[in-house]
Length: 246
Image (cartoon, rainbow, N blue to C red; front, side, top):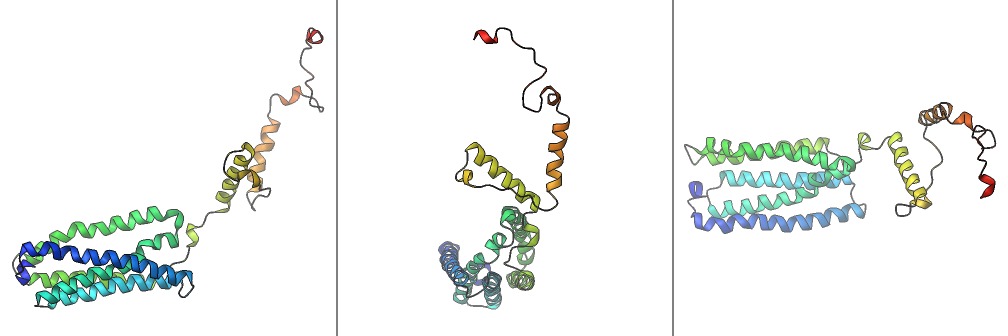
């Protein structure tokens, strides 16, 4: 602000806080609106995510173009406030999209996407310094580059984004059966809320043989099996002569 528009540094502190205050309000309103559109089946989850993400970041990119070419400090301030505020709508887009496509792996996906996005924050100071080191007109290129990055991301998201559960994120049959086994064991042991009323008796296709084979092998190799007769009594145990005395 000081280099390009000649504003005082003492006045820029309060002005720098206003865009984030506006964004905080828009995040709350955008979240409520997105949930309303989805819960009332007005729009699909994919449509809601694309509209809010592309609308938020697309609007931010458009206002950055205004900041890049304006010569009025008032126009620049209003455009910056609007740009940061518009990004609040994108929180209802990409930021929760991980839970839509893969709820089981949402934390991992968020870590990857947020980590890659942080790389831009690391390189931004160096790029800005390189553009503005010799002339104040370098700020025009800074905002143009930021706007171009936003438009590129918006285009990619509009084409490839989805709000539906992905096939690779669904649990496999073996995993489902393992979970059912744990529930059954919890019910037999009396542990776990409501577990005693849950029983599963059938195995998924292709898994039954793998679960039965170890059981048959264990019974065949039991070293104590030969010591018991068909009536469940031990035929090889020495009789205790003092048993009748008790």
